[in-house]
Amino acid sequence: MTLQHVILCEGYDDRAFWTGWLLHMGLQNLAARPGSSRVKRVIDPWGRPVVDGQYGFVTASGAFVRLVPCRGGNKVAPAAAQFLTDHATHPIGRLLINLDGTGAYRVDEVTICPIIWECRDADAPGIPAKQTLERLVAASLVAADPRRARRLLQGALARPEHGDPAPASPA
Image (tube, helix red, strand yellow):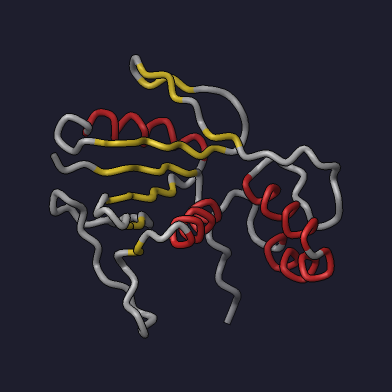
């Protein structure tokens, strides 16, 4: 039986984190073209293109992993509902949901318990105050190398709050 594993996250910053983590774990980004800045078109196991900011990966054992940025926390539950509805024809092995914040969500008769990224360290310069994946990563960077972290985080903190791509600068 062909199936996919799905990771739903709020936005592009979370997608970037997951991409790095999946690559670190040895998954292959199906869009990557070694030696080129261009990407390949990715097709899922059912022949559908992977589009709308989604990424496709494959594990060493050949399992397909779909990474989906939902463009906002309020859009994660509807995306989960759609994947669960499609499960009959496009089976899911695992549905992983990454949200900033707390709580469980119900979609139809299924309770979804999200992964909660949080860092309970005291607030510090360069560490976002909101409990998010970015706060966890920033706190880890600060703990490992405070001087280098300060330089890295200055650019990250200048980006929009909700994970949308940074607006293009005026020409």
